[in-house]
Image 1 (cartoon, rainbow, N blue to C red):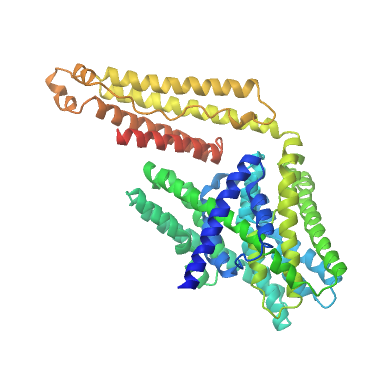
Image 2 (cartoon, rainbow, N blue to C red):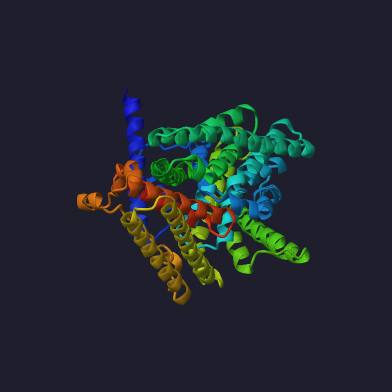
Length: 562
């Protein structure tokens, strides 16, 4: 009983500290992951604090599936399809190249480590973390293409890294390394994960179409990562890839397979869950510092520092060289370059490592060669990339040419989408009026509401074209059209609107409020359909689409409860 109380107290303490630090970080402007990491490092040396040791199984089996599913659900499938080639080059090609490069450097600098064990270190530190990348990128304005590449890379590089780690560990323990077998295993693990994720995603989508209660939909949302992950792992394929694939599919189809009320409730629960788990992960990483430092207390400082610096420099240099080679050199040679130098530089500098690397390194066997050194180097890589790159990335993004122009274009794009959606609503209203005449007052109210929103969108579009402040710019523009509540209709209006013709008697019984609700819902469906077409054609970004859809969902919820 005492042990259970202590466990609960430790978890509650983590939750409270996470909430407080994130709230303070918002006030100071420091990115949440960095603030949480620093607080965790400081707390690790507080006497009497519980020993928060990360269980790698807890991270790999419980926390990561939930976070990766949420990240996949929120990611843009059209953007992923558009940038498939560069995403795969980063997620697979760069991960494997980084593994081998770090392996060669570490094997040369650390006596007795061996190439296979050094490649295990390389596989651990090679993949940028999905949680770290999205958490840092969310706090700053990055070009849309860079965000798409970082999200796609960090969602799918885990399979390559963990497969390489498995092969390296097997080579150390058995003394044999078969590259054809390793390549075959990687293909099996990755493609098998894609297949399982697709099949289970289709099944979950079928279920969600038939779930009408918002709270039941929340349950489906929360259990889906595990429903996808566990069968994949049992079949020997990548559960993380399966979770990402299912998240991408279900997030892309959420407009058509979920009710608006369910999207509102599920979105709130999913955001809160991700917000809490992300914060706890970074806090837990910081809390490991004392134990990690204790593990290398008997080693020579110069040797440890030399190996650590060499690994960090290798990762940064290899990433920069790979991005420049694949996006600039080869793109120019093949006459298919799509990335600007600004985008390439930001992509190469945004390689933050996080909980995936720490969880992976803790799975190494206790008797693994130089295990304490490998754990320490991994921890320093996480610290340096999160603190160094995470703190300087916003400054770099603000100073690079072209980023301000993209902010303006995105704001204009969102404002245009608002106007086109409003046009669709008015077209729907005119069609309803032709088919069901005699509701002039209701039609006029709805037309006035849509016209007001069109005026707000036009003003936002004009503001986006005219003037943007260097820091706030597109942040506030293009986001007009706040949700409007359903106007109350007086009883006198209700009675005045009653037609006297006998042929309209059935419609007459309906009442003005119900007519307003029915017409309004039809118009919202038309707006949502127009936005969905814009999203699928690539003319409206995923972030703006989700924001606009959320506004429509709230408005439909207001119509329902009136």
